[in-house]
Amino acid sequence: MVEHRSEKPGVDSSILSLATISMGFLLAALLAAPCLGAAPIAAVVRQASGLDWKVTGMLPEGLATHQYHLLYENPATGAILTLVRFSRGYVLPTHRHASDETVVVLKGKLEVDVDGQAQTLGPGGYAMIPAGTWHAFKARGWRGCELVVGFSGPMDFQPATPPLPSK
Image 1 (cartoon, rainbow, N blue to C red):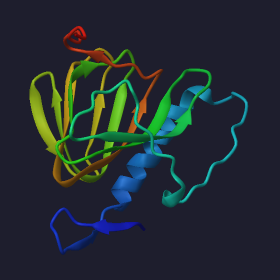
Image 2: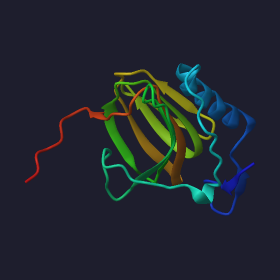
Image 3: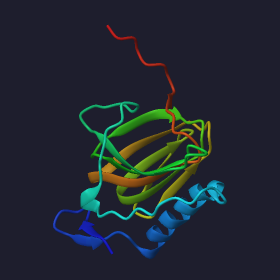
Image 4: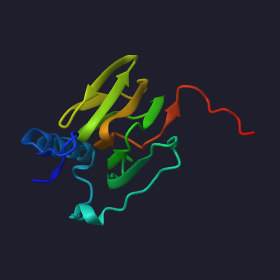
């Protein structure tokens, strides 16, 4: 069991409930299913302190930031499973992907807007977003949020509007 600070200062709580852990394993199993029968992969076991957090140049930056750690990539399909953290207030504007996306909230709160319908998810909450569906994310809460994000194929980012030309 992993413990963290609650969204409320001064309150400790445990976020990885059995449901949250089960969803993470379910997500991993769904992403691994297309490669059943493929060559076996090596097991990877890591402590949280050993994670290699990176910032992708694909997503927008601002005062609030995002980071990710790649957990797994299926060489046959390009499907990926990542840990993602958004700092407080980070906004990922309306976009879509060519692959299905699944998001499981591990810590904090995430506002998910799918086709103009927004809902805030807490730990254990999840969204399954079909390929081609317009959606946006916003980190809520005191300290942002941490997520498990999976794509059924290669990850791409198609913004709702083209970026403005550089001056």
